[in-house]
Figure 1 (cartoon, rainbow, N blue to C red):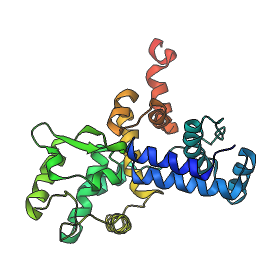
Figure 2 (cartoon, rainbow, N blue to C red):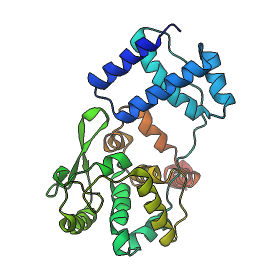
Figure 3 (cartoon, rainbow, N blue to C red):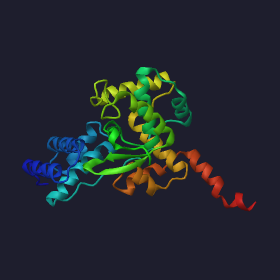
Figure 4 (cartoon, rainbow, N blue to C red):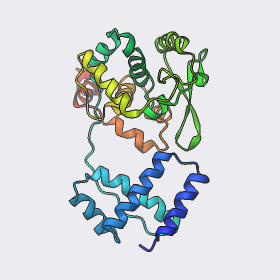
Length: 270
């Protein structure tokens, strides 16, 4: 691979100023390049270095995809992605969702409780939820205008019940952001994580791994369980490719068992 640091910096500038990629994406590009400088300068050394340092196949693929975007831009051969174990994403159980719905939060927990319900109801990324403004809400049609990665917007529907709860909450603080501090400032991610953990503990819920993203996983899995199509799920989640949404179709064994009873020829013909 003959891509230089100067070429990489030019690639990042073009992605930032011409394609308007998110700051988080820029951080991933830069982290991938640092690993390339550390473990490179060839694909085998790069991957071996990451695996020997404890990275999983999924973790390696994050940096491989980031570097491949740069290599494609520079006309270089991409690095093959690693075969990763297809794991069912962590989700909340139905019992835990019911606990969350029935939970009566204290005054201090009201904002966090509403955020958790919004994530469950819409499948938004936590970054998308925290950037929502009151002006992004179409109250009549029950739609959020959500800023996607790259600056594009998508419309995300929400439920009547969530509208009722948001209306009660938003009429109290009077700030631009839907979720904000007492002074109207954006919330800090680590503080939100801590607040959600405390909320779950109070509600008697055992928190799954990747807690904040588990709300999104729970939304997606139950969307498919209740008859939603992968194509509609792709649009709801804002995925750029159908492949990213299909992973949610790998449901739990119990879902396959239930489906078998519905589609079995022997059951229908007995």
